[in-house]
Image (cartoon, rainbow, N blue to C red; front, side, top):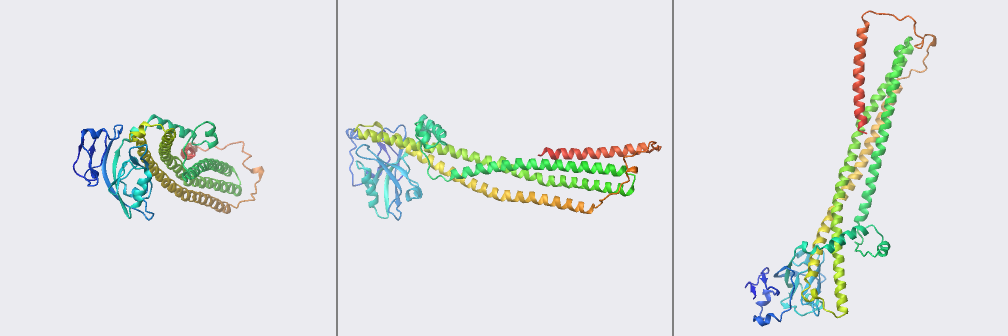
Length: 445
């Protein structure tokens, strides 16, 4: 029994069990339909596979080439219905958004297409000037229904053969679908090169700063040694020279530590790029790759089903799914369209992220290198100024009265030990504090 709406609107729903008709034609004066029960058995059987359809019509304005931007499949003599195979990007049909892959075309410009071939329907669409009205049965399909085990296995196969050459894949008997002229491949290679460059730059910079820290410790050791010699040197001129020279080296050590404190944040900035920005982009790329493999899997599935239809047609053998409306094929077409939309969106997101990352890379690397060079230049200029002021050579030393000759009878001063002990404690506390700061600094390397 037929249950249908009486109105002829664009979105009126009719449930015919195994039969789908458009109310637009039920009310048209050009056609007459027999509603008797016997007429139901003359209608082609359609296996909807649990899916539903919604009848409607849409008027699309053509482009300058007199096209609306769809490809059509099915039709006489093998398939009882005609359907949209693909909606091309940036075309009138794509911009309108009503027609989708898998939708059945039941009329063009008020004329039914029942029993016609796809070539005839294409000519009917081209025959309309300016705009064309298309009556359709929209397919309501759940994409999960089309994501079968076969699609999952195809995705796995694409992951395996992604990095294989075509010769290797052919030798292993692995067919595959590929994206031609994918500019993102070069972007990915560039990202990997930048990541390796940053990783090497950070490792090398850490080694340089660690060596620079060791040089600063050598300056400190020189300063302590010359200051100790100056304190013990009995000759006033020599004592002053050694003390001044030792103090100059201590100042150089402090300048080195100051320079390191200014440069260490540079490593943190480079690390942010390497450990946060790049992994985030890689995560987006991983999602993009998954969508890409899914889209390619549906493309391969469509090709296999096309080949199956051609082989049956060549043998003049009937194919059940084709003779019953080809709903399985139309479901895969819809899944392919949605997978392509998801893939295109993620691809756009990846390209935008990689473009921003590339801009940050160019700006950041220049800024950090300038920062590093300026810090080194400032350090060397300051050290040069310190050494210019320390012109103490040559030093005249009377070795017979130098610090290396000690008096055999040490002098004793009552009450001086307590003062010396206090001074030693203060010096040890200051040295311990400096050593802790230096330990914390070197830990950042």
